[in-house]
Structure formats: structure tokens, C-alpha cells
Amino acid sequence: MNQKQLGYLFEIAWILPSVAVPIAFLVAIVITAFAVGISVPGEAGRVDPKTLNTTAPFDKPGLRELAPGRYEAVITAQLFNFTPGELEIPAGSKVTFIVTSRDVIHGYKVENTPINMMIVPGQISRMTTTFDQPGEYYVYCHEYCGGGHHLMAGKIIVTPAQSASSGR
Image 1 (cartoon, rainbow, N blue to C red):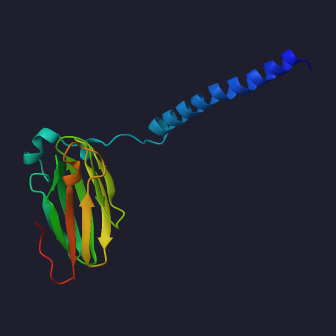
Image 2: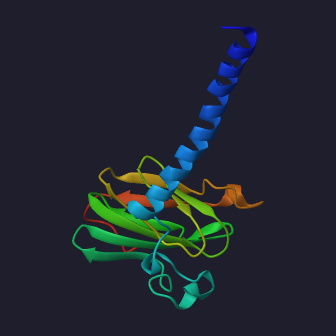
Image 3: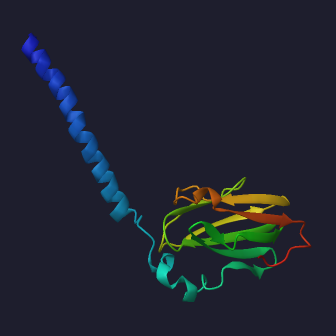
């Protein structure tokens, strides 16, 4: 094999993967979007950020008891705070967080729990966790949202099972 043929083989060895890899990624995206059915949220997962004050459940943010030991926390994010900023929950409770944004992309992270959501205006994010240990769990925005981003924080107070109120 001469120098020219060897150069041609190296060229083919680089060109084929550089064409095949992007095509494989495109095929994976198409399969994911259409065959598997992964997509952006449907109508149940969307809300108009301009009408949050009149759209249930965001017209009354806060903590609601659904059943003994089961709660729903409806939270709105806006520059530079969460509403409500503080929740009080009895230990052992299972809480579903329903969160959306009024303005820009925010994050909602409850430390020492699996709750970690990207909050996009118009999209409803839901996550559920159980708070077994009494204590204070700090909530913060982990997506830069402007000059007051460092002020965007809240708190979840988990009380011994018998002494919790409905949230603030």
C-alpha cells in the first residue's frame, strides 16, 4: 500500500464517523419525539403566566392537606422570591410540589431532598417527596434569574407530626 492509498484510508476513517454520528443523533431525536412519545407538557402541564392570579390552583398558592399525611404545595416563582416563601409541614408527610413561574426561568431546589426542578414560565412542574425528619429545609433558586437572584430563597419547616399548621 502506497502513501496515497494510506492517506485515503485515514481520510475515510475520519469522514465516515463524522457523518454517521450526527445522523445517529438525529435518528435518536426523531425516534424519541415520535415513537416513544416524549414531548413538551400537554395542556394539563401548561398555564398562562399572565393569568396565574385567576387560574387554579395558582390563584391560591400555599399548602393544602389532601388526606392525612398527604399534602399539595402550590408555589409560584417570580423575581426574586417564591410564594409562599415558607411552608410548615408535619414530619412523615408526603408532599407534591406544583410549581410554575410568572416571569423568567427559575429553579426550585429543596436541600437534602430529591426536589430539584427547572421552573419555566407557562409550564407546570410537579415532584413528590416525603419529609421524614423534622427540621428546616432551605429552598433556593438554582437558575440565574437576574440581579436579585441571590435573594431568592425560602424555607420548609418540618415539625414533629402533631404540631404543623397549614403553611404561610
